[in-house]
Every structure is written in C-alpha cells, then in structure tokens.
Image 1: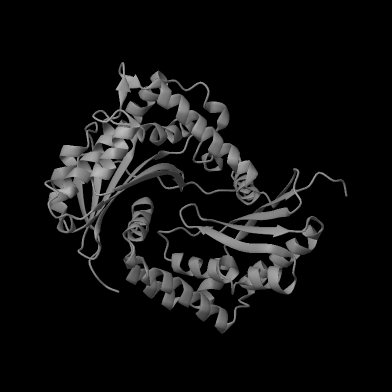
Image 2 (image 1 turned 180 degrees about the vertical axis):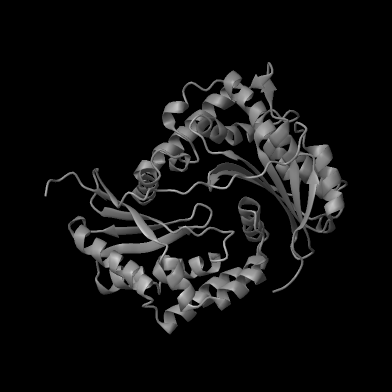
Length: 427
C-alpha cells in the first residue's frame, strides 16, 4: 500500500498539498476554506458557495459555466459546507481529465482546471460591484429548503438536536448551513461585503493530485487565485463540548411513530492525541460496525431498535449514539445502551471483537489510496488537528492497540446528554 504522499508548499495565503501520481486518469482539485464557527457569520458563509457556483467574471451566466465544464472533457464540479472542530469549512472540488489522456486538447487541463477553480472562488460574477440579485435570492431559497429538509429527516434531525443540547451556548451547536431566520436580511450588498472579509480571513488549503509537481502547482496557483496578501491562517484548537454538571435528559415531542434515542458523550480524545487509535477502536467495538456491541445487543438480541450505532468526532472529542426505537422502549433501550458503555469500561471485550474491529479499520485505511478524494480528506485531518499521519502510521497504531488501551479511553468517556424524540401522546 505504500506509495507517494502529499508534498507541502505555499502560494501566498494558500497552503499547498500536492500528490504527484500517475495512478489516476484525472486531476483532483480540492480547496478548503475555513473560518471559526460563529453565530453572526454561519449563515452568510454557508450561502457564499451557492452564489459563487452560479457564475464567474468571464462566465456570468450559469449556462456558460456549465458549458466550460463540458469543454474541459466533462469536468466535474461540486462544493460542500461542513463543520469540523470549531470551524465552518467551505469545500470546492473540481475533477478534470489528466493531460496525458486528452489528446489534442490544445491547452494544459491542469492549468485550465486551476484557473477555473480560482475564478469561481476569487472572481465571481458581479453586477454593480456586488453579487447578482437574482442569484442571491434564488440561492437563499436553496439554503432555506435544505435547512427545512432536516426536520423531515428525523434521523438527522435527532442527531442535530442532540448536539444542540449537548453543546448549548457553544458555536459547535450551529448547523453548518446556518439558520433560516438569518437568510431574509441578506442582500447582494451585505453578502458581497462579507465575501470580501471572508477572503481575507479564511484558512485556505489547496489539494492537487495527478501527474504534476509542487513547483508547477505553486506557479499556477499564484496566477489563478486572487487573494488578499498575508500568510496562511491556522485552525484554532476546538473547545471541549458539553459540561461536567451531570447527565442532561431532553424529551422532544413531534408527530412521529418511531422514537429517536440519541446520546452525546464526551470522550476527551482528539485526532492529534496518542490515544486516537485506541479511540477509533473504542468506537468501532461500541457501535461503528455490524459486529459492534450496540448493534448486536440493542438491535439484534433485545430487538429494541431499528438501528443502533455510534459515531466518533475526533476533531471535537465527542461521541454520539443514535438509535431508532419503539416509543415505549425508552427506559429499557437506555439501560441496555448504558450496559454496553459499562462493559467497555470494564474491559468486557472479546478477542473476536478486537480482531474484527481492527480488521475493519485497517481495511478501510488500506483502501484510502484507491481514491484521491479519500486521501485528500484523510490528509486534511492533519491540517485541522496539527498532527499529520500517513495511513500506514495509523494502521500501525491500530494494530498496536491493546484491550488495556481501550479501557483507558473508556475511563475518559462521560455520558453528557440523552435526547429522545417521541410522539405527542401522553403516557
């Protein structure tokens, strides 16, 4: 599985991460632009990529932008808005055929791809010096619909609400797409003013994979991205989420037929910590896989849940448990979930559980090099946390984890919040 890994560089305020490889047929460009999560900025930041994708200075109409992608041998463009740690990150992705497969292209597709990505991010379509009003209004509605859709997806809604309750009063409670009530006041003028500030404040990381070199990418990035002067900004260390004031139980009533029982736990181990491999093993044995304790004991053996799983956020240092249960099974399901947490703390972990989990995690890590996007996402964890690991290093860490290491991590796990979404009927 060993092979080339990312080489580092810098172009103005952009950190460059280049993976020279001939393994893939396409260049993969990914730009991360992150700022601290905040109540004031979250919605207007979320709206920016929706507006930016509509058109650029030389292609102000969306149709012209799409035609340009077609001209680049059907290049694929996409974006996302996410939160990691205490940061809100806008992600732009562009995939373009590598030059050696584009016979008779007449231009370097590497250069053309970087120019296009740079123009999308730093040279948007404007009218009178601000964003086009029709684009702003249309995309405000797009963001609104996406936020409204969360309520209709009860699994996602319950997960969001559990985090909101666990991290009440903290920026991490915010959805990466912002808040519906903050959309109406945004205008082309106010959004463009924020865009200029965002360009000056954001942390930029540009990833490029393909048959190229850091030197070539650095020169092209300098030509393609028009950013304010300065040095790359570092990501702040996230604050601890939750409180030490005991377990908080929140019951919410809606028109549902299936209850959603979610729990938020503070694990206190982050991506940069030496115990990170042990925390991955802890989560895997607890609830990340079909052989995990939650799945087998809550869903299969007790038949109490339609689903039962756990998710570990290594940037924030928290773990969440999600389950869908019959509404009348709240007490029994809660008790069995707690039993699994107690079992982990006691070291009640079989050799089969250890080896199955180890095999699942290391297998996923070995498959990383089959996908440029997966390698980029893995490497970016190092940017966020300040500790870089290659997949092989993490595999060695996973293979070295003992039962005692997992028990040590389990000793740091504290249940913080129990959230239950149920129907409106009185008991």
